[in-house]
Length: 355
Ligand code: COI
Image (cartoon, rainbow, N blue to C red):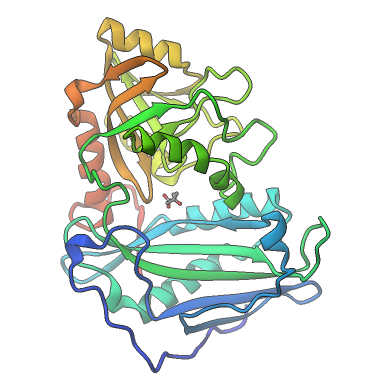
């Protein structure tokens, strides 16, 4: 690959001063990374430039048919000053899985990890230091051919932007309340559910909006065929502690293969827990909540980190989990994963990469 050119901004922005109230996705740093794809040339012209608007032809294909994929990862500032990324190579590998599904040309994964490190390094002063904060990294690729015909693009842009963030959910580490969605579906097998692409999130907006109107934070998606088996939350994967077993829905094509999900499974197994990736129906969860074996429910995601679930509402059936409090397994997973991410505990798994 070519060398990354760097054009530094002459108008540096002021950084948010209140790191306790960053929210999520509200602020963006001074620079962004861009690289072009043109048929015949491949990916080329990698560059770091001042953050700003991107001019698009109104006929740009991404605006019409949603040929877009994205990723989410974070940079953390350790107490000793190191800047750490959490398994960035897994994000780039997943981006190529999404690319394949969306007919987007493959990227050079190692080069893109280096590009992310270079960008984070340029804007390193934006990495917040307050407990629970980080620099969210959003790589994305979209089709720019000015062509209102439904075909794979021949011209695309790969962009990376950075945003200092706090907790994704206003609840932070306090348990979130979630509605089991029985009217809408997010994805079906054979569709794009496993890909990180805008359309999956567009499909979730209506249900999300309705959930918020009745005071819930998110929706839990059921499979699109039987409307019975649990899939994911949309912003996170989900785990159930039932008796001595920890269950998370198997990846069967309609669930996103979360990197925090993968890390949670590896962590729990390393500590001797039984973790099964399998079909799990909402009826099974309800029964477990009725007979007292449903001990904990928690979500995992880059944005959401580890998010305990305090309540599930399934039509008129309300399940209160662990008295609406965070459970011991959820707390251990949170402490260990964030401890590794923030460089507070020894990373025996080799998950952290220094910038
Ligand atoms: C992430 O966890 O990084 C995501 O991309 C989820 C997004 C909906 C914020």
